Image 1 (cartoon, rainbow, N blue to C red):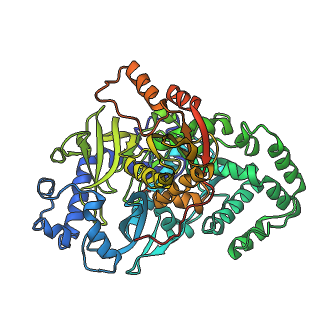
Image 2: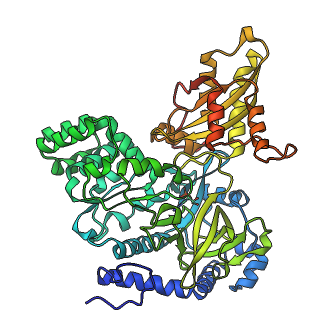
Image 3: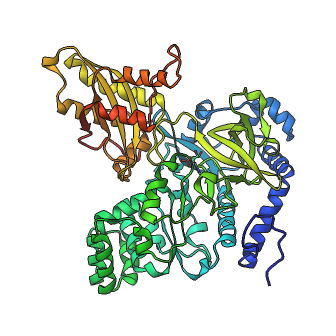
Length: 592
Ligand code: AMP
């Protein structure tokens, strides 16, 4: 018998798919109805358990656990503010600095500080909180898409390289931590959450072997697949690109029932041995579909029962929507959750809505959330229950693991409420200029990369007078395009093609480790390109901006462009194109 749920979710199908779903939906209702009291409790729990930590004692909280005292004493901080303490933990200091519970590992964020991934301390029990949020996703989805227990999900999921800090703590991305946890590895069977990818394939650190095995399983089980996904849109497009490059070998494996010898990982080989059987008919089908020049609708053609794509296409990922629409033949794209290394925030209660309408409901039990009205001073923080519709806020976080008043860097707009819980549209991440997948390059990093690269031009008496950039995602993998206007003082000694190619590589060497990892380990970003434009192009750009109402006094060259007329202008003035001739340097070890 299903429990009766007083669900206020605006859904076409009000009946939960199972008892388990009913409980999950009930939990969402409770949390969203009691946002303020849950938040009060969460802060009380965090402050009382961490009362004796060095950080809270520094601000003389004296055991207070109420919001007023917290707000008046605890400063709003950035990662850089707490980096000395983080470094001490990384170096092996086990005293309770942020958290009374031992720090179990560091989660390496895709946000960087001084070129390296930020290290987010976490505690063991945070895994339960993440698990809890995951457990709410399917019950909501089942309300909108019935029958998801009648097949499988083809999800391209990956782990990344792990490192240890000098003090011996593991440092790895949050999903690598989650997929390696028992929560994931030994998850109980759930007919609504059956994946085509075996754990062995997901947990293989070699990205080629992992992707190969996952794609092979996806093809073998093509008639069972009901949803296709990856965490971010860029990941799913990478998988399609992978199929474009590897379908011949995949079809060969399927035809013969033998595994590509490039797959050397023993657990992957062992599990594929059980799954892979000769199937010439399927091999022929794959060949017929992939041989075609036209890859439009390829997802629907290969996986005809797919009901939706499960990928995040909000924020920086919105740039991939048209390409995904092309490959999927317009399948709905579900953005189910909003999360980070610091904390999993919340979920989309209407996951089948259009990408432009996605809103996330922050679950008040995950952490204590405050909101800084965009452009206001840090003394004006607003509580989760008090944000106002239509306003934009920066998200501030206080976690069980000990981050206090921490600026995540995300800007969110309130679009409405579900019960008493505000719903947020993800607007943007602060200070991000360029992003292809999880890389986030800001203006200062770009400027620094340009300066380093232009040192190579010195001996040619040449300088970069103006520049701008563009994240080109028309092809997979996407790549950074940098437009340069050069001042060549001696045209007889102009920089050669080779030098300009090396400038591309020098820029890549100067970019942050997430960018370089994507280039080297994941192949998810293509070689950086410099397009040299005619002299006077940037002046034309300014004339264009002024003609559209910009003030001459205040005009600044945009350091990143995407507006079509501007792109057309720049591209029509290109005199030469140059690409990075090699991979930049990257190893899992941190540079500092
Ligand atoms: P990381 O710390 O590397 O896990 O990155 C977390 C960041 O990714 C968040 O702070 C957001 O900026 C971004 N992000 C996560 N989920 C979403 C989402 N659903 N939509 C848009 N951006 C997201």
